[in-house]
Length: 117
Image 1 (cartoon, rainbow, N blue to C red):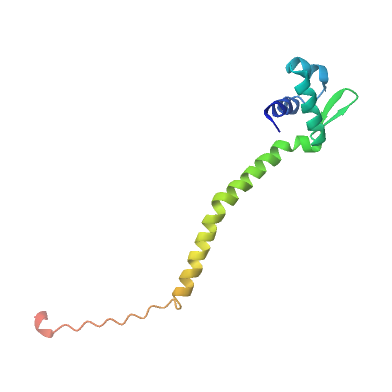
Image 2: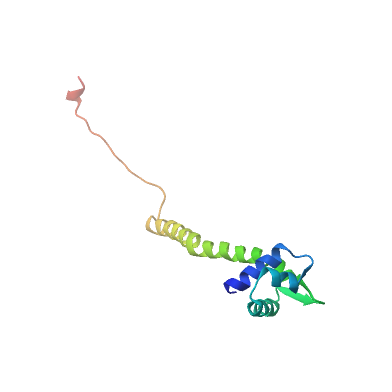
């Protein structure tokens, strides 16, 4: 959506009850941009224009929720997924390099008895 269409949709989304085209015309001065934006919103199934009144569709009600959900998934995909992959690969690599978890260190200290006096 372009900026004008987004502003018109925000206005419709904030005032979902009892909107007609005259209210939108008083709010937005450019009638051509308003008509094009309304047609674009109808084509995207965000609003319905019935009997002179503009109504939000189910997709229109959920538009901002879906947009925020897509943003969250994008953040997860871009930032958190590589971190998790790095951690998992480092654990797997550590398990492969270190074949056994037991450390058998036999250290014997042989002190001469002369120093203990």
